[in-house]
Image (cartoon, rainbow, N blue to C red; front, side, top):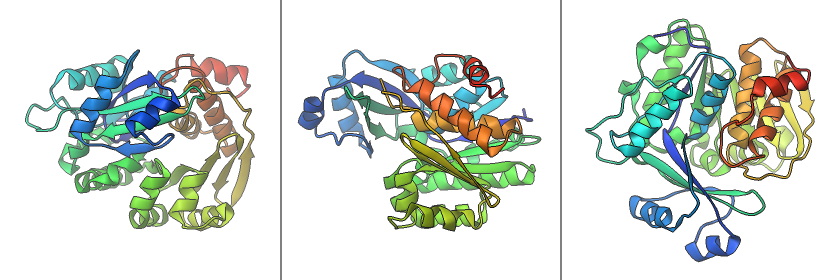
Length: 329
């Protein structure tokens, strides 16, 4: 069980997605447009209030890995679920999508499978309310050593740092990928995550990682500055590839002293859930297939534009077809 093109590690979360008006968000005390961590009781209240739901295996890096699998790469995702209905749904969903899920559902964990209640506003903005549950109990012992031999890329999720056990799993996976001769990268996840784990993230970027993906708010929060260029410059001093998405503005890519800006065609979103995840899909697919930074960026933009056109965090259209139409493959 090895020779994967890309291995992901992160929170295994069932996404529960439903439409919601801003008045509903206000009534329920939900802050629009961010990810909030919630406790079990709050999760049950919000879940009960949802209508017209779509449920799908999710989690930021899991969405990226699923997208890469749909592009034909050999993929695996390391995550933890309880042996309950949602956990079995999650594991089967990943395997059915063509991604190996090497950790079987566990009966012994106390917390139920993680879930995120995602409310999508009329403007396409998503407000995520995440109960970490069993996924946050992932630790170094849950990282299968035999998964890494001959594998090429490891993609890590910043959210995993919200618990010490997650940090140990993260560290072990990065060690194994380094030993296998592959490259490791991270998504900064969100600006509050960058705030919470500033020291850990800066150490990783400067000492251990080969590529880092984030948006403008995450980069400026991480380096505690309003000057985006200064933040990216600091990161690029020691990390081979730095990527910054900026909504409808060009994506900035810094790689080994080279700067590339990838234009973005604005799209009115139906649901912004998964936009960053699928940008990562396109970008990492480009790296894994030996493309230039310019082409990697364009692939990321195409993949992100596809996912925001519909409800749900994973592609519904064949990304290879879209890449071909864009002249990228």
